[in-house]
Length: 481
Ligand code: HEM
Ligand SMILES: *[C@@H]1O[C@H](CO)[C@@H](O)[C@H](O)[C@H]1NC(C)=O
Image 1 (tube, rainbow, N blue to C red):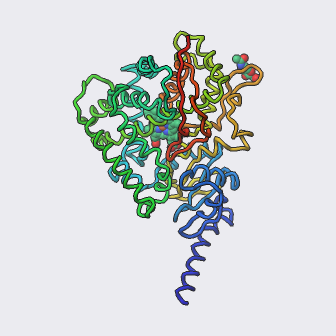
Image 2: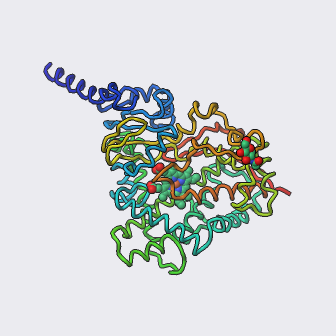
Image 3: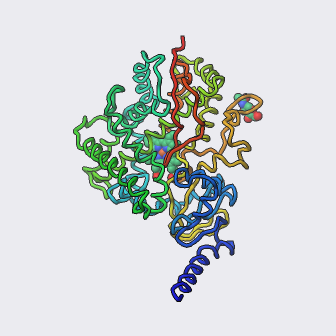
């Protein structure tokens, strides 16, 4: 009896602690937050599968509680941002650039340390982000502009497709090798031949991490990796990541032409000179960042482009019409191709390839949208919810490129609520490469081929884990004469 009373009192105190500040207006509104269970009940009640599609459950809740809300995940209370104003205000603050410690993720990804850039923190992150951004500029200026590097790969891809008419392709992995090659060239100066079966191994390793539906839960609720259902998944991912690490160690150790300008070589020049954060381990994880951050995201954005083009041939025709005005489309032509730019923007809004930015932790107290966030407050930015906010987009569930076009003269009109690369001080470092790759591949492909479905198309809704992708679909290509 006494135990029952004691535990009831404890439960009640925890309950008060979790919810009192909110009632007083010191904490953003949100669903009921119970001890240990957090807002589990409300998340389940959204009718979405929280484990498989957390971005949908979160998006549903922010429609109820607003663009800044607090939600209990496991034993932590998170602040979730999903409006452009809140995301801009928050992500421009230098107190908001920190990543919380994510034990399950770091164990999988980076030898139990916060290495690399994507999941790094503190001085190492600042130093290494600066270095990576400088290195990317240097690769452009002393090797080749990104546009030319991308077209080199495009032309090899085109040669590979040359005798593949009427061949049935898988929509989801059509671009995997091409985009892997673009990233690998930057990272270490290598690429796979299109017929090389070993490329599949590497892609499987990348996807075992980025496409794992449970990863979001494992990141948010670290102890989940010891629970029955998640344990098997976690071990499977560990196995893949172990092999991926081995592969990267080999690439790092392989002697290369010193004069080749790649991330690996630029980094290794610094290794010789010392500097706190230049270690072999840091190089391996930075290269891993390139692959997990860059290769699949590009491939999936392009797959979505194909899916929407075979779903609506009129759109496909409009893109082709714009592209055919040029012998070979280069990035400078983007401004003369407003429909294509609007189409890609709508694909990025729809797909939200990275639906929820990697988590943040506040390093000293800050105000966001009038709410004080204390030191250590964990924050997530839900890009998916921002891209699907019905108050801003009016009809977010419709795929409509013309929302980005001026109705009077058809010119492209950007919208600040579209931020597929995140915003602020930790924005994606690959944005330039990504924008150019997607545009150049799409515009130049439609000049050479038309795309047709070969069977009924799946739902257009994205699925996935850390990153989203279209559902499986099949198509064929036919040469344009
Ligand atoms: C369509 C393709 C891509 C999308 C949609 C995308 C999206 C994002 C987003 C949303 C973030 C998180 C920003 C934040 O925390 O606020 C991010 C971070 C990052 N991305 Fe990308 N990305 C893409 C391609 C690339 C490519 C091609 C590369 C590398 C060449 C890359 C490298 C990175 C890195 C290094 C970070 C971490 C930045 C940091 O934490 O300081 N991404 N990306
Ligand atoms: C199209 O119209 C808008 C205003 O409605 C104007 O700002 C823009 O410059 C025009 N663009 C072109 C290409 O005429």
